[in-house]
Image (cartoon, rainbow, N blue to C red; front, side, top):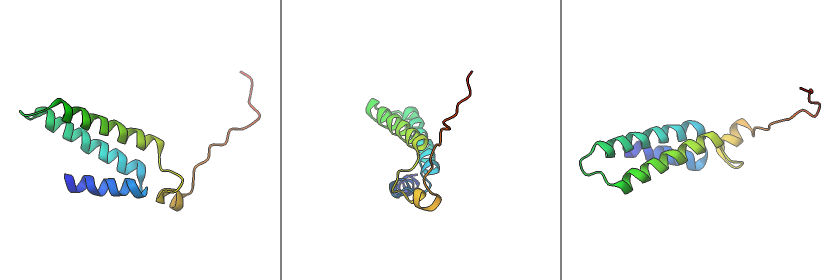
Length: 89
C-alpha cells in the first residue's frame, strides 16, 4: 500500500494524470482511515491526518493540473470561453 502511494505521489508531483492519481490517492487514504479506525490502537491525530490528506487529494483532483504539469504539456491547457452575447432570461 505504501509503494502504491509513493508512485501516486510522484505522479502528482510531476503532474502526470493528476485527476486520476489524486483520486486514487484519496481512495488509498480513505482505506487507511478505515484501517486506523478499526485498529485497536487508533489515535485521533492519525485519523485526522488521514482524513485531511484525503480531502486535499479530492480538492486537487477537482482543480486539475497546473500550468507547468506534464498533463498541460501533453494535452494542452483547458480554457473556458464565455460567449459575449448572452440570451436574456
